[in-house]
Image 1 (cartoon, rainbow, N blue to C red):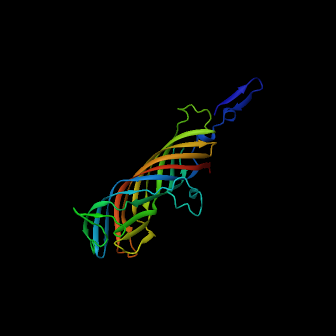
Image 2: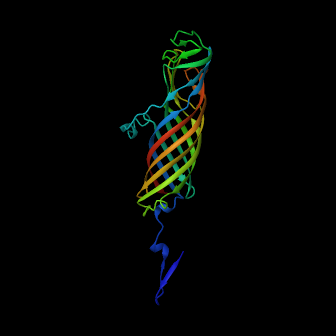
Image 3: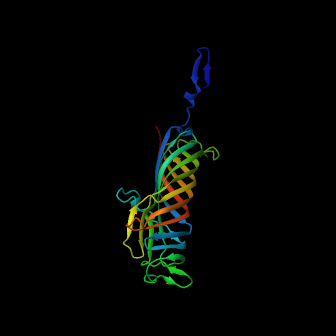
Length: 273
């Protein structure tokens, strides 16, 4: 603290009174929350299906996300889980580092009517319009439908760093507008609601803890008037699901692993506790 004294009357004034720190200078003790949407890409994966009378693997299966686009469902409380969404709440333990908990609600849809290699066995081959030459099968709807569409839920905790770029850009007042960069790493569990129909069995669609994931991200945070922000992120990671429910019979299951890439845009708020 610096004190200035002026004249014979020793009029003194604290420099912190005349030039107080801006609200955005420090983050320690602040909490933030955000909500947004994502688009996703997935690598090809091998999917292994097993049950009482079948055990087979499909190789290099292609999948894509299921975007909703700009839609009122993102803010409709009764339909918020229909789009691909991101929710996160976090706390700054220092000015630069925060910990958070969130759900990345992605969607994963296997592409139908693609030819893929396979190995293993299952009952009544050829009855599903799937048999092709060269030890391949066609992913017909009678043979297999497979989606994590409500969704591919990555429930994770993250440890992140935030740095203010405003000084580099010579922004005059960070309490009005501040630009930050953030980087982080995360780990969590996969809690998908898998919509599957395997070999003509009854469709199954239920939540189940199916595996784990790890991830890393980088993003830009645009903060307005101290408390409100827009955040964009690029997040990549690895998912391993070794226990996917596929039918109502608990003896039936599937497993797969793949890498993902998310593009996220979210809106949120940050407040001192």
